[in-house]
Image (cartoon, rainbow, N blue to C red):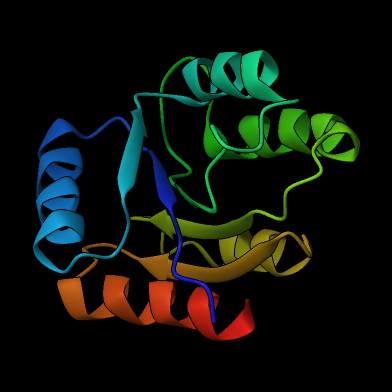
Length: 136
């Protein structure tokens, strides 16, 4: 069982980002937290670090509804880049969307490990990280 070193949150809600980063630190869930305001900002990071596994996250927590590049667009670009990434990365869709179309779409993408509706409580965050830990 391997505890994740780096968690990545791709979400445009600054209050959520602050709360989640505090929760990660309070529960010692990871050594490092990466935060991006939208999918495009995250893709710049992934493209810049595609060959540097140490900088890449172990887990991505991805929102759907964001400006510039939403979660679906990020996933499209990530899937194009994925063959060049040698590190396994777990993706959780964390969103306020309760739209059944979004849920079904997420189920069809094998890279998405789970779909969780916000708000995400510390216990749920801890459970998701533990799922990763058990699987790895």
